[in-house]
Image (cartoon, rainbow, N blue to C red; front, side, top):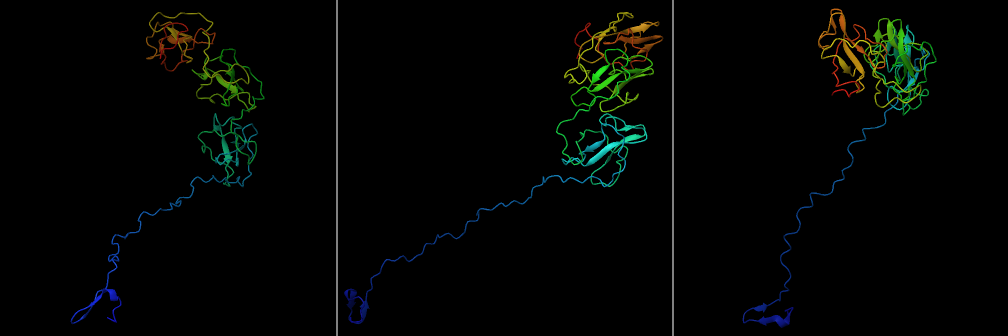
Length: 334
């Protein structure tokens, strides 16, 4: 037993020395369910993959060309045609027919046209027809920032030809800047032609304006192809926000042939029926004016609002789509 490490627990048999060693109860099995998989959904960094796409627009420099300053008027100068926030485009009227006035109204005039020395382009001219419309405000100078609001051009320096006296001549905001600096009226040798919303020429007369920023006494016959500007209360006034109705004609002549079509209409399109229309002439009534406007020597004619004339001329109207009203001054039917 001298070799027994733990004498207390050893016993001798008759043949062998038997050693009984106490157990300690230590765990025999390590945990089997230890995590075997590292997390698979570790946080990602989501670093930006797209650089900003709306980087500021780069401005092209002014054209290297300095040719042809163009006609001297209120419209030639520097513009921001490229839309980058810097006025590096020089634009003006060029050609052989002089200035054509506001490019917002027309872009060609006889053999002249509105042309630009475009930024980043060495060409002295943009071609006739390059622009189909114009809405850019003029800048204060080369390289300046474009104005945030439309600048109003001053009234024409011309004071020639007040035009025929009627309810239509006066001040308008043709340039569309919010100020009535354009003086418009009927001129020529055939008298007033009535409302320019109905016609813009009348025999040898035409509707013409002394346009703001333009020294010319007249806009040419054919300058306007339609008219929708309301008349203003006076020079420099703000344009009316609603269309003003002209009063009925001061004439009461010729009631016309009795039929279901004669009566009051809103020819001026202001919402009030102040235009008296009927068949006149020597061939009797011609029926529905929507179908025809002349009948033998008779024609469909109106005592137009704001006009002292008892008749609109034969041929004044080329079509008719106005609805008859319930009476003088009534609201136009919808």
